[in-house]
Image (cartoon, rainbow, N blue to C red; front, side, top):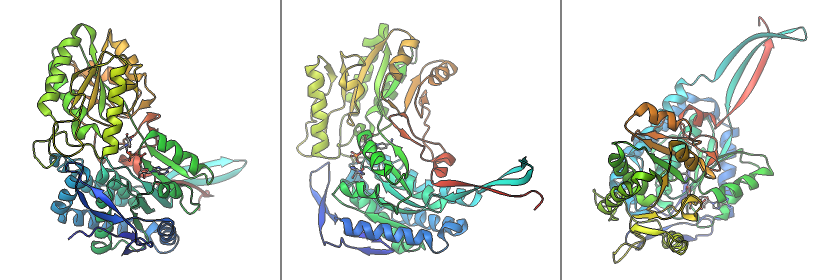
Length: 486
Ligand code: NAD
């Protein structure tokens, strides 16, 4: 049975030192599910101290085989707890249950196996051969070392995916971690802490899990001198704050931030198919995905036709109960988030936009539901086309030529993801190569995977999560030279 009101600090499941708790809410029903420990400064201090000790003493940082064993234990414990965890994920996150079989739960759990394998197979040492500098002949090599204590700060939209995509590679690399979960989804993190404490041999202090309703706890994690690296996923504005507060101690910062990604539908006989895909992939999980393609670019001559098919797709999907296996678009996480989305819609209307479909709360008694919405009548300069709405809201924009489409797609402060869809796959890939984004899906291809680096250009972030590149973010390079021949 998953317990809910504890932190994991130095191997022990403990309440907040203050005894304080805070409520976690079901976004589909507005019911209070229960409470979580509300960590304060004292708890964070203890967690960072434990992570520091676990890194500096003991063998965690130097024993990849043991780390691989522990990561697999965690994966297996998460698999064993899958149904209880699924219920928590649907209730707390409002995650459509169908997605818990993929990116919302089972995918990232399985990906821990990839991280464990990498801990074992990774070539920690790279031979650079011999060289002679100023008459001194040396044999050189590089050795990858773990970066140290990681402060991992995560958002609420895909809690398991993001918590585990940080934890798996950081542990595989030999780091120790203080994980600070988002205030809206504490129980997803609490479950992780409990399973680590009860079902794995991960030594005390190697992973510490903190839940708190106070955002300042995240800020403290990014200033504390005992933390070597901050791995942050969240909004671009908070990312800036993290980078600023990490500057005093010159921590490595690794940032996965927001996006406003474009979907380019080419002018050919795949346009209808493209709009079916764009509708699904734009509003899945109520649009609460940083990499969702929320700007749909259509050839001007076929704009009305594309918009009609896209609107029909959104209407067919609708917004529904996340526990229903057919639901693609559930609730948004909170009343605060719903109000924020409604603010965007009001301002878009005032700026002359029209809603082909949606544009308001879904007709349900309870829960934070917004109807899947299609906005037209604005160009790429409008707020609704530039800012991350983080709701089930797509903006369709006409383009005049492929060059124009690429120009619109790249005309964004963000550079996280994108999509191109057309009859000629090679042509679509050539267009994809012109996008200034960290990932691109062509004709429905899915780039998501444990071995695929994910991250953003421009203000969508710094660094890559997942893949070997993501693992290496949690390492430092030590270059070594010894006399040649020795
Ligand atoms: P957020 O930025 O408000 O919060 C994220 C986390 O940062 C939370 O744990 C929060 O408590 C903490 N935090 C808040 N203020 C802080 C501060 N000053 N210093 C340190 N930590 C602080 O984001 P959110 O609303 O929880 O999540 C939604 C955002 O996350 C969206 O913008 C979305 O695009 C982004 N996101 C990005 C990715 C990605 O990989 N690029 C993935 C998922 C979500």
